[in-house]
Length: 419
Image (cartoon, rainbow, N blue to C red; front, side, top):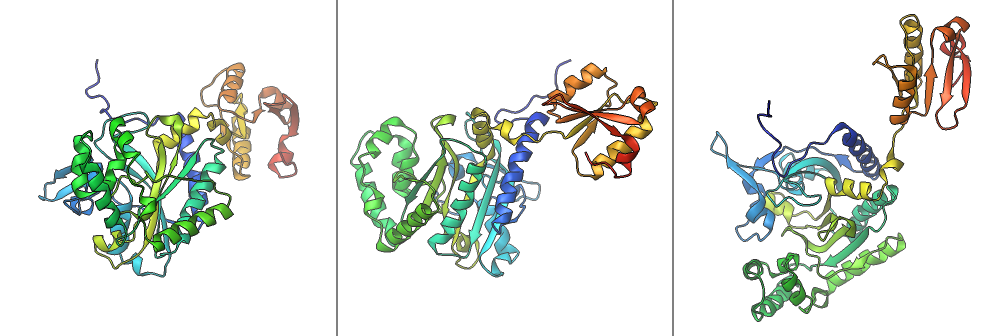
């Protein structure tokens, strides 16, 4: 009998062996950002399409080509959210959270949806971890966000992760540069159709083009770094000096513009060459006008998003998952009917004492149970059969050293003996 339906292209089942790894990585992220003063926020999977399609001149691929949008039964234009930031901004404005004392520091873990060509580490349904910091115009807001991302990657001991930073200017200086870039592009004949279209609305987005011919021509284009105003230059300089002081390495890359149109001043990416040509794992920057565009009062903000599938891919590629492994402390083997009552008491005592403890429920042979204990990375195996019960003891074998110890059952249950 064949399946009545198979998984859709661009989606993926996350099986138990992977969800354990996901949870461990999420736990590290949550702890780092909670310790950094960030609080978790959860927003709906569906939003009004207007939240993302705010401007008919928005040149981002997400808005133009990749959104899952539909008219629902209430005749409302609905979209599955393609990214997390806009939903968080909508929430803090609508609920009034933005009016609380600032800075407001939030993080999220959410599902997102984009109708793009599935490729290595990129899916049409994907997961994103992100954080947003509202209320500060200072470069220290970027420092705060970047510090905790860098701390996370270092905690995982990931190698060859590079922070790349750029300044794309502000409302004062960017229009001058975009006009200059537009003139440069219009004089060239070998740009693709997409770049020529972007040239009319947001020439900066041409730097996102993956066409090798366009990339080569743009390598000779005027650099935005030579055309930003003094205020933006000082902001960028202060940020980089602070990163130097924190021993956070970075690369200045004038070609980074990010894929969303709401950024200003600082944009950044954490990249890796181990996951193909599109190597961004994490990207973000400053967006000082998005809150007011969505309907709130003018509020400066900085944020980022990490593509979780791409992150897991790098962890596995670098064989780092073993370092994250959360081993079972004790596996109880050889449970028999005659020893069951005592074994359950021992299990409960171990569990109450804070051990991660499991027991056999399959009725396997003792040999098979030891193989299973090894498979689940159990540190120790506790053995209590009829012979042990007659002596009033249980055995505890260290799986790494093979050293086996005896413990008196009653002494352990009464708290006189500590394992």
